[in-house]
Image 1 (tube, rainbow, N blue to C red):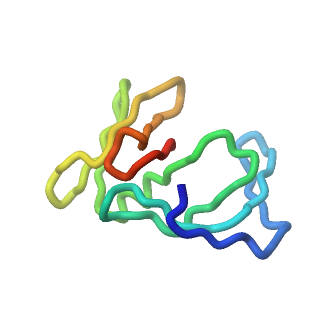
Image 2 (image 1 turned 90 degrees about the vertical axis):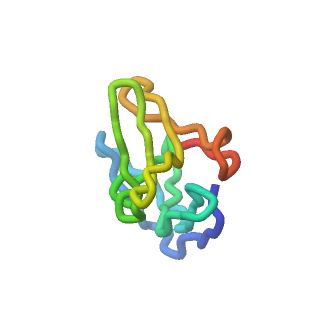
Length: 107
């Protein structure tokens, strides 16, 4: 998923999950979210079951996120065009980027 990636030089660097388990940070990179936008400083974390997308980073990049009981729409604030959508599955909003304009991705 990374368009650029730098492996982690500090092997003991970890993050703590909500259940207090820990995951090793394997590196840092950049991920494309559309043809003309990407998110930098994305962590690659070992043993994480999903790819997580930061809503705050999307908002900083000029996107609006509309969350409903059925799904999520992410649109550009500048022209209100929808960049991608996702569905609510359980307690997670899932986005299948394989059907979007940026190629195969799953977040």
